[in-house]
Length: 488
Image (cartoon, rainbow, N blue to C red):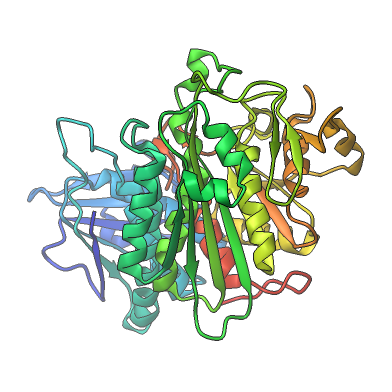
């Protein structure tokens, strides 16, 4: 979906839908054509996410867009209002919206938020539907005073690029596992690298064996599809640091021999959401051009119960010599992430962050809208949390108590891959911590917010691509861990 965004002082005649912001108090803009009393009668109060459409005799529409309290406008408010507008105006090709012309909101940030909201709100995955109809929106005019045009346009350009990256991740996440294998995702990564100028390296099962990547090889044993590890690199001139992004790419998770119940498998095509998020972030870095070197790792394989599948009590040996006893084959994500964490640490990066649909325990603790955030460095996890707040993606810090580490002790190996029935998100984090050494590291468990059952603001039903915008913000704001987060 390609949408062009421009700016103008007034809505052009070709725009057949106009979105006008209305707060919970104060005058209603004249363009709406209705008084606050009339709007109240139809249940419109100006709350963020509310919309009321008025159809004119010529078929065009004016839509009142709720933005909440006038003095408390944020990027998140504008993004939600824009997404709501995009869904309601889906039958119009050219639309106009005045959300970028509000006092107290930086023009650049407003342009970015509106562009992201429109694109993400208009998103639909229709690849497997007979009716391929998507949103008809192809052009958006941001209506504002002329002095705001330059900032709005710059922000909108960035917002479009980031939103398209989110849509890329959503498309990958929503694709059935029959069509998106580890090999297919690696091929897509190579295509994206070729078109964007990223460096890319793909390790097949033979190279993985040579490099002693024990986790990917062990988890893959039950699958007829071979594994892939993809390493993408964005290298700007004179970078102020190097950050590694690591994404879990379990293309389908049956649980292996520790087989999941059928209902629990229904969303397991999304178990590669972490890898898709990392690929999407890498794809947009050449556009946003942060002054930070970034290395992205995609750890890709199925987890299947084949005749040669790894068994309970098997022991994995990693390239750094660490041994792990497998006590549950459905705790496989941490096994493949460990390979990439070791590689990133060997590369000597300044900081690492991984993203994974890792544990049901995190869903139980934080629900379906909030990701768990853990790490070994308060300054680095604080940067991740700040970036998430800017992206309107909810995260919540969880502890990594040292006294729980003993729950991972194995009778015969250095570690076992589960820590018992309690604190599963924390013991999973403690397991990953074993593979990063002293490098500042953060872990995002996105098992809850990987998917939504309904449209909600900028979130579309289905895959959410959670983490893409957080990671873009994180890279752009990056400061050496231990120092305050930078700002653009």
